[in-house]
Structures are given as structure tokens and as C-alpha cells.
Length: 91
Image 1: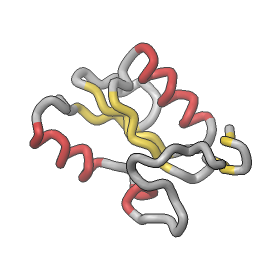
Image 2: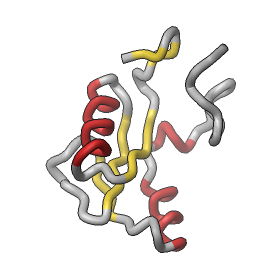
Image 3: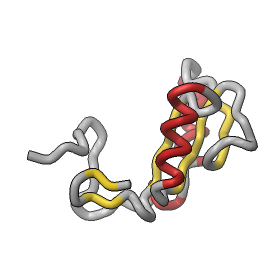
């Protein structure tokens, strides 16, 4: 999968609500596209796509756990990579 000229191969994503429904479908599709996925949910499915991580994101302390559990590819900023709040769409 790619977004225009942007390849997703080798990149990483954190998907919340990833144990079921839309979140699970998104996590599965991103993993199929070659991304490393951290699948975060209140009741994670260890058999689901990506690496599962249990977190209640309504609790502020849980956010730090997600940061610590994120895939290694997310830990190293990429030059010119996406920044929080920016869209993947380019004009």
C-alpha cells in the first residue's frame, strides 16, 4: 500500500481500538502494507494484527506505557517525516 509516492513499507504505526472493528481492520491493512504495528486496546487480541498492548487511554498514565511499547521504527524520527497533526496528503 502506498499513499501516492509515499511507501508504507518499513514504517510504523500505533493503532488505538485495534482489537475489533475499524481499528482492527486498519491495523491489519497497515501490517499487510509492510508497517510495524502496535495494536492498542482495552482488551487486546494477542492473535490480532501487530504487537498487542493493553491500555486504557482515558487514564493519563497509560499514555506513557504506549510510548514505551511503540515499535522501534517510531522511536527514531525520519528526516522530512510526518509530524503530529500533519496530514499524509500533500499538495
